[in-house]
Length: 451
Image (cartoon, rainbow, N blue to C red; front, side, top):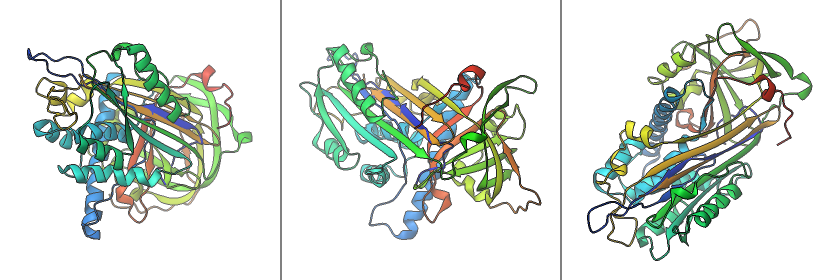
């Protein structure tokens, strides 16, 4: 199913919060809120039935490639902000949440979102179908849960066309809520997110994020809990060194396993790559380990010119000795600046155009976009969640190994959980992307409950 993930742990993320503000008669913008929450989303791009199979494949590859570019660009924004912090986020969660807002956008606002999100078309129906074909794939999945929700201020209603697309394509229902009662409104939204992320994502939205001027909150939540196809024996876990730089290290629980995995050395990245599949799914975790202990920053730069969506074409299946630290991480960020830097500034300005969203003459703008995520990886598998809220006010390397290669993740690395499209490795979509930059020896050694 989706990308190979390191362990059978849960990753939850609340990803995007965008606030839309209505324009008053005086020409000022009041707070209009749209909340988007993503926990974990797995997406596979497919095209409409009217397209030929060849055109569908071309469109799938284009969307996967652009989605990978979006994921890397967003990662660069986060990493530059705090290079020493462990990052975990859901690129697809953010794409989906902002993508819902895109359905209600027109004009230059819509054009910016199309370019910034890497959408395959400027046609609303095609955009909605892109996300729908991903969401419907995992609608009844036992390990990957994706949910969307629309909250609308009492006395307002969403336009018929917007509601139809949200309902049929994004599987999102619309509920009326009194944002003026900010405490109860935030509590209602947060409880919904918790229920969709196995209680891993809490307090996605603060009470002061909404008020009487908030009009819409869009929420997406994703939860993933997967077991490794090849689990790490608990008896083989040993304390070992994890290097924070060339000299300093901490002792952490290191998992050990010898098994057949996708493995490769990619010279363009100056890194070694391992892909570990999850049990009974098309998901896997791909770990990109810089060849240098201090190579994470350099890897970040190299990824700017590398198509992450087809990284598995560089891998060969071979027996590998794997050493991987147990870890968990939480991460939250306000994405306004990052999205502006990626060319999506208009939606935050007084010139924003969201006239296809509400049955109202009020002009709307996004005031805030927030994302929150959690991941834990251990011997059994991976659990991850993410939520997003918007409030509106190349070719395969030839390799042969005379000895069994070692993949020893004993220094900072990057990882992604991806969906593997059957039949074409160039259409993989990153559901989660993260880094392990540092580990705490004390916390890392704590015992964890089973998933």
